[in-house]
Length: 215
Image 1 (cartoon, rainbow, N blue to C red):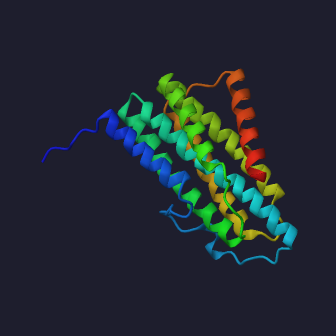
Image 2: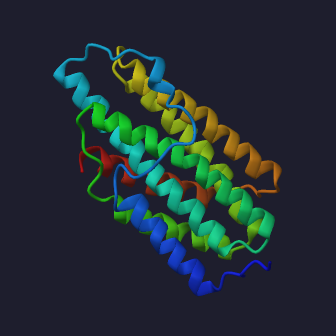
C-alpha cells in the first residue's frame, strides 16, 4: 500500500482545520499527559486572588495558542523533513499545556482571551516567515522564544497567589517543557538571534501578554 503525499493545498487545509480547533473551539484540546495539578488541592483563594490567578492563566493560555501557531507555521515552511517532524512533535507537546491551562481557567471561572484567533494568525505568520528564512534561523527562533517563555513563566510563578498550588504546578511543568524544547532546537543547529530580532520578539510578546491580561 502506498502512502499518499500531501499537496500544498492539503497541508494548507490541514493548517486551517488546526487553527479552527485551537483558537476557535476552547475546551477541545486533549492532553496526552496527566494534568500536573491533579494531585494539588484547591487553595482557599480570595475573590481578588482568584481573579488575578485567572488573568495570569489567561495570558498563559493565549501564549500556548501562539506557541501552537508558531510551531505550525515553522513546520509548514521547514525544508528539512526531520526539522518539520521535530517542530510538529513539539507542537503536539504544547497541546498538553493548552489543555491544562483551559482546565484551570474553567476551575477559576475565568474566560479565555477574546483575541485568541488574532494571536494564532499573527504567530502563524511569524513562524512561517522564520521558516522561510531557513531551518537554522527557524530553530534559533525557537531557542530564543523558549528562553523568553521560561523567563515569562518565572515571572508568573512569582505573581501567582501563594495558595494557588494548582496553577503553580501547571506552570512549573510548562517551564520544564519549554526549557527542554529550547535545548532541543539549539542542539539541532539553531543559530543565535541578532539583538534587534530578540528585542522585536520581546516587544511583541509584551504586547500580547499585556493585552491578554485584560481581554
